[in-house]
Length: 135
Image (cartoon, rainbow, N blue to C red; front, side):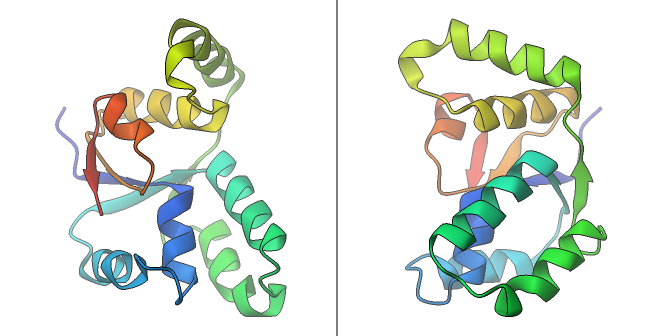
């Protein structure tokens, strides 16, 4: 089954929200022109919210966007299951030399399970894992 789905990674969401990011306009163009249905995971949202807090981005500023994400208004959120957790852990052990993060591995598993080929990211690990990077 060929899909018209685009997985959105933490780095793309961050570049979209941070107008001073050097990739902001490029990512904003992808978000505005969207020809695919956007998909992400609850682990990506966890990473994004944590990153925004660490970088001291005001909750007042990001609240509407984050709530739109939670309400599936921007993209579909796939919840990580115990099975995906175990598969991701197995992948990390099998590809230890690439230093994939656990969240990256859960994303790879979701993309494989949903037959997604493309990802909007600034993270080179998705290329290493064999996905087409859109950014």
